[in-house]
Figure (cartoon, rainbow, N blue to C red):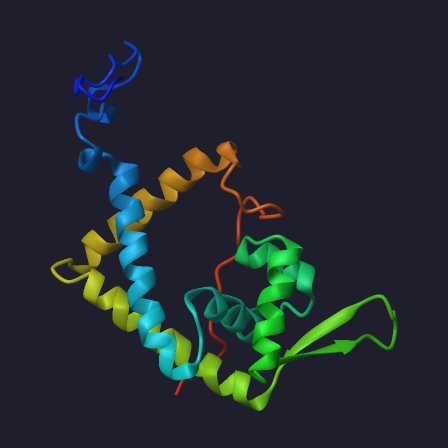
Length: 185
């Protein structure tokens, strides 16, 4: 389509009418990307007092909540490749939020653990994320919010076969991260 021709190309006949996009801001993918971008920016703003970026809070919380204790397990759970996770852990370690400990059973294995400062920061993350989620859910009742989550889960299942999300080493499905009892304030 050239710059002067603003008419989108014809959609194949087998695409349902409700999936056809007339304008960019009418696309489900575009709307989801906008929501993710804005929510991520707000979460990052709220993480500033903890000294965390949007990328850094996720492995910190996962390490706290799931006990994933190796770079590989943490990378899979956060949908990152091992190299990206290593760089994130370097930053978290420099902030004294976690440390690497070589396994005594197998010197090739390096385990991860949170420092006291890391545990304290991780305890605050769920509430900060929940505050942003509550703002995003303004005007929804419980049933509508559950329905939205159900729709998003269905979309996720439908697009998992794409697998080309740029997150090498990502698992096809991630277990939910549950905060351990007594971990919240």
